[in-house]
Length: 464
Image 1 (cartoon, rainbow, N blue to C red):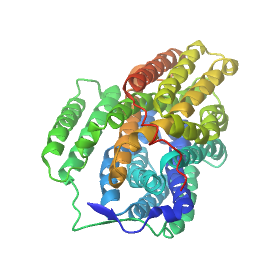
Image 2: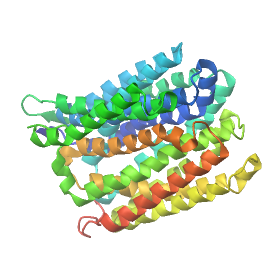
Image 3: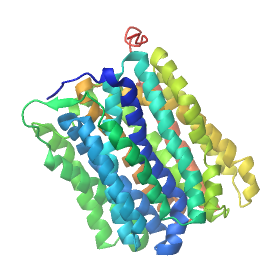
Image 4: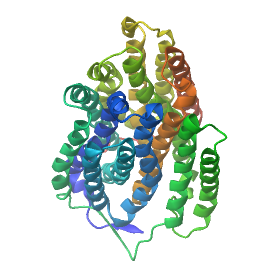
């Protein structure tokens, strides 16, 4: 098992800055791509299927490899893995910018997902190791808020770039924060060092990648090939069998990719179940609303980017405050109320019609409620899940929660074609917001029933 060699608490401010910047890179890329999808389809062709794969190729590798990355983070050190992830992400971004075909772009997006998988769990694990108590809640809130600035900057600047000099330059934009972050990472003195020779569960990693990738491949390609296609059937069967074999394998292997004993902690198990539902809805918001504004209401890319900002602005403004209150009073009712409020925003968008002027009394208030709900929920959810695992396993704990969130998003995006009816339309949009609302309500109920607040003694402010 890895043991601390140098306390990260001595570098608290630096750790927080690095965690924010590293996550900023991943968040910027995800937010920029959504506004570029119509332009990518126009230049490279392929229709909705290519648009889905541009999003999901990234999410497949991110969601499946993030578990491996969490283990690597705990075994080899968070600083080392973050550095490697940033380098991979930067190289992949340049390849995306130069992609001559949709196929090359999809492959390079998958490589970006590899870099994102290496960065994400290590960034949050650094915060868990460096902060305690209410200070940890505030730090996670700051990380959530400032990381969300990438989602604010992304759609606006990305939209201007797409409308101005072309969608390829958005991938050059994502490489800029990497050049700033890598030198800062090298200055962190504390990290984890393994005792003995670390081992990685290769079989578990292969089962995760094949399982997730196979299921997503089948769900997306059925729109083009049909459910009876041998390719679709084979992908779904192979993916399903791999996922079915994953849990038994993890139970028997000596050093598993995911220590299933983590799920014995109530908040960890329930929190991840809530994450599955809630982040599925959030993934659909980002994909469906942006496409609707551009393809049905004919908003320019930068206008669509500005129009979808309310949730991110509210997250930026409220996350630190909510994190502080959740650290003091416990996460349960924040996690229950937040998704319920967001569900109200989703159902409000059922009044959307074909007139773009309806944005002001349908989409805008709906997005404001979604943003308020997400702000109430995100930081308490992260604190509840990661606060229930030992510090030495914070890397894999963060990886599991992030993997659940990414997998939920990619499966929902993969099913978007089924929900939308093969192409974006007002009727399809109505179906999508109903699915979003139901997923959010399910997350609210799960949190209210299952989450437990820590003892008052555990949640006292950290005065160190």
